[in-house]
Image 1 (cartoon, rainbow, N blue to C red):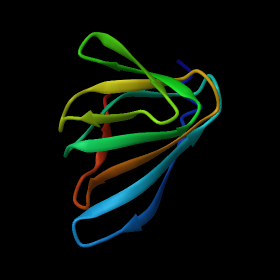
Image 2 (image 1 turned 90 degrees about the horizontal axis):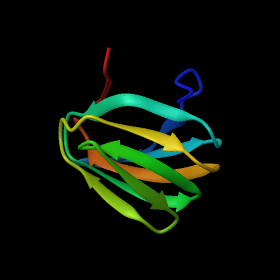
Image 3 (image 1 turned 45 degrees about the horizontal axis):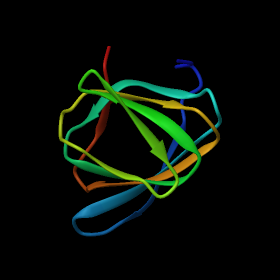
Length: 98
């Protein structure tokens, strides 16, 4: 996984309880092992990726959605150019493993 070329995370909006982030990247990019401090919902808008979690691989493609439990370590490898939306509680943070 090319951890030097991580997908871009941009906060698009925030309300009283939730925030929306956009995740975009090119094929071959990846997010190294990380977790969210609160439960997160990921909705794939374009492309394909592999989510590694629980010693399993989950194939993600346009139209798919996935709920990631709080504090669950996972990584993401983009197979094609990729765009997704993440919905998280406002006080949630994404923390990368050392």
